[in-house]
Image (tube, rainbow, N blue to C red; front, side):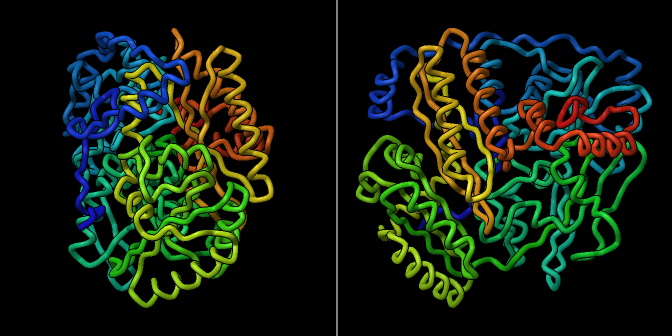
Length: 533
């Protein structure tokens, strides 16, 4: 019996280390041997003791926050648990004992009324506020400008299924609801959201909305921003109820400004999303293609057809060779892992008749396009291990490797050139520092007009791995911008992508967004320095 998504535990991630602290990954002997080929033969130094600066909030400010009814915490242990996110630079700072980005207090809200009251206090006193729920950001989204005192507004107590309109198939959730809990609530009523990002164990409904998350079933169910039909936004100037109909011609849609706003325009307290009946049939298969070019062409053909699978993913030759479609067995070989070429994972969900129909059509198309079927074993391996990939990073860092991911999105006509340019930029930047690198890539989100590229980079960590990665990341960002692609498909902007993001959207759009910021948050207390400088 394979694990279902409703069986996955909700996890409070350990600060400075990804995922469930009781479910960490050990590297296999074959992986450790492979690392030596990159010159990685000494483990990283033991982490330094974390140093947290004193809170800058005086007794008067703390008392004012306490009048809101929310719980106010200033203990170092609580503040350090709200320290940054889970990018590799974030984790490296933890290992260096750098706690300088800790908020001055953690304020735990239980209701939307308390959120509004906290906002009012922060606005009146000029205290910066950074919303926190799952905390799984990988782009610096939890590191606001610290030129003034900062609180972390903890929304994790605001959970639950508020309403389910079974006729319209719309569920309303409190923003702090974790994704596994959301699926359990829905399953009790026969429905499913079907949004499964790799951060699934820790991510929340509100966090997925404000970062435009893209789950691994995006070709079947859409990105999270496609699912959102409405939301409630608390701002210093009042509360906005956004979304009154499926589609409307009643002016610009403010919902689209809030989606992806990363807490800079307001605090999302409830989200209304489209849901669907729980699938009665699920089939996941592996396919082999001789190279990335032929596999990408097959993906494009499916994306541009009327009949699509629910999940579609293609690993390039390097990622396929390391068997990363099955993270729990990465570096090993199995009967299901093809030799050479590229592995594609194709998944179907729905009722029996629908799955049978789509499966028959897609099988015929992929066969005509040069694919070789591998059966269900590799597809099921991927499905069962789909949340395990990020768990590999910490033991790799422990072993002395530098490992990080980055992603982008572009049109089909530009896809392979973009892949080549980013790969060359990253390997060149690391090579100039004397560290050869392995750069792997996969496509996991496709559209009729284009697709995303997701890169994983592994090299030997130098004495200053933060600076080492900064140079490689800057080179990758420049290559993405030069290629005319977007700086992010689903990781969001935060602070890490901010400068490239501003170049991407241009002065006119920047001025428009700043005008919105000024209207909703005139004193600039909401996540200052995130998304917009």
